Length: 377
Image (cartoon, rainbow, N blue to C red; front, side, top):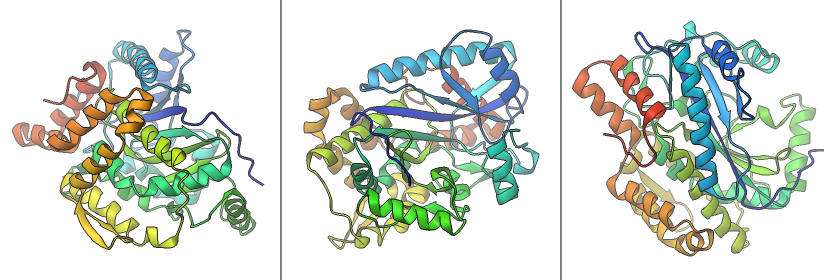
């Protein structure tokens, strides 16, 4: 049986996967061990660790109730990482995928779980050298976590669009706003949670999958959103790692406002019909971003992504006020009104320079040094 460890409702944590780059042509480099050794020469107490391949590193925040505190912690982690990277002549960057690295050049990090993933999934493990943001939202019990997972599924396209930062992959403009999710989709246990109504039903599903030898833990589900019982959270896993240090904080604030509305309204409208258009809407957001079209299977209507996002933000005003997030709500609204996209900015750099190395240099410079609120330019 999976035991759900209760946590304080609406608490937040984020994880960010970052690129480790050489400073010659800004390709990925196998620098995770060297970087971690340099970082750990200082007493810091931050969650900084390796990821599945050696051109990646992951950072995680502590548990926060307020996103201002989260941003302060992320800035402190960045300062430590940047100082360490400079000593090694390494670059760091956000972004959902490296524009021109080749998966066959990557090396699996020598950690037992990553070696097992490599043995099971073959070349897909190296292709999983993509970079995402995960958002954890605290839940009081498993039933609430199941409800919130289903509730947030409706808004997955919004998180895709707001974080999209991977237009290039393997040296090619993919025509997608985010190419990263194609790598995630290749795993057989990707997708979304089954239509279960409570924690007991979810546990029954998990036990059946475990008895069949398909899963051993929740880590084996590569779903877009999943309950995380050992943390007492729901984990949103759909986002590209944004280019800027403050965008992850805005995305966390958005998730917290949506979760508050779910809790306050005691939402429980779980039904299979809600998932009829899930994959289609997800594709629209990945491919077209703000230009995408979403289909509401219940109301049987189509509407633009931007229109849907603006309507959702308007409905969240009471929750922004309750949380003290009026500034965050306004910042999100401005991004949606301007159709501000990391992927569009990266394409503009390539159009001007003709160089994917220059694209990565600029995104590295932006993640390492830009002040919060600076905006891409």
